Length: 454
Image 1 (tube, rainbow, N blue to C red):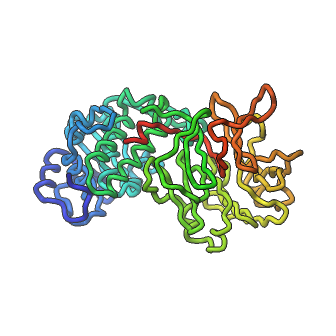
Image 2: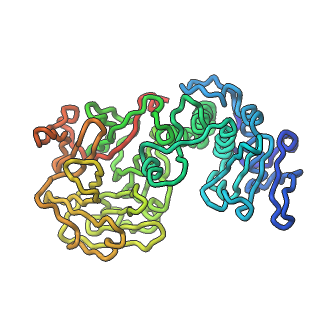
Image 3: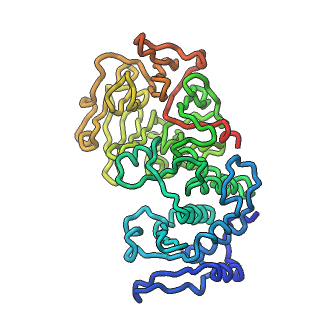
C-alpha cells in the first residue's frame, strides 16, 4: 500500500489516465474547452496533477476484504473501476464560466444529461489537499451519475442548517442504499484499515467518522443519541440516559465543548483538540480554535472556564474566562464584556429543556443563578454585565442537557448528575453516576460501540 507521498508522478501512469479519461479545461481567453494533453509531473499544487494523482491513488486501493463492517459497491468493484464505469469526461471549470462554481461551496458536480461527465471547481478543491480526500470527492460525485441525490439532514448541526436552507440538503437517507455518502464512508474506512502511513490512516478514520455521524438520517453502525460527561478527574464517557460507556481516550482536563457534533477540548496550555473516536485527538479546525491558540495570552488561557460554539446561523460563539466573556460572529468585530458580579461556572445552552425554556445562552454562576445573554449579536455588542438577564431564583446548575426520549439531565454545583422528574417536579440522582463528581456535560452526541472498536 502506497500512501499519499510527495514526489513526481510516474509518466506512464499519467499517460494511462489521459488515455482512459477525457480531461478538458475551460480557456477564458479562447472561450472554449481545451483538451489536456500534458500534465506537469512534479507540480503537486497544479489542478491537473492533483486530479491525475487522485485517479492513480484509486488504482492502488485494494478491493473489499477488510473488516470495516460496511460492505460497499465501490470497494467490491474497486475504486478505479467504479469511477471509470461512470465517468469518461472531466471538465475543469472556472468561476466565470460555471454558475455552480461561482455560487461557492461546490467542489464538483454532475449533470446527468451530459452522460458520464463530471465538472470540477478548482478553487473549492483547495480544501481537499490530499489524494485521499480528492479521491473521496471524485467517487462521491461519480455516484450521482446513477441517480442518487441527497435529502435534507434531520439531526445534528447539518440538520439545523438544512432546516433553514432552500437547498436539497446534505444527507443520504441511510447507508444501506449506497448513495454518495454511503460509498464515500465505506471507501474511507477501507483506506483506514489498509493504510500504513499513520497520518493518512487517522485522516481516513476521522473523515469517515464525521460522515457516519452527520450524513445519514437513519443512523448506521448502531449509532445512538446521548450525551458526554467529563469527570473532575478528566474521564470522558458516553451516557445514553441510563448507562455510561467510557470513551477510549486518556483523561483530558481541557474545557469540553461541542463543535459540529464532535467534542472539543481546549486546554490551558493553548491547545485545541477534537475527539473523533480515537485516543489520538485531532487538531481542532476553524477560526475559533486558531484564535484561542494564537491571540489569547497565557493568562487568558489559564483562566478559561468554558466555551460555546454557535450552531445557529444568527448566533455567536463565546469564550468564558474568569473575569470576562469574549464573543464573536463570522468576520464581525469581537465583543468583550468584563465580569465582576458573576462568578462563572460555565455556559448552559439548551433549546429543548423544560427547566430553562428560553432559547438563550446562559452563564451559570457560583451564586446559583443563571444569567441569560442577548439572542441578538447586535444587542450583545451594546450590553454590559448588568444587562444580562438574571434568573428569578437560584437553579444551582452547572450543565443542562436534554436526551431525546429520556428527558432533562443536569449537573449541579456539587458535581452530582441528576434526571428531572417532570411529573414530580424534582431532580433524582442518576444511579450510574453515584459517587462521581461530574465537571461538565454536553449533548447531543452520537456514539456507537461498533465504531469505537474499529
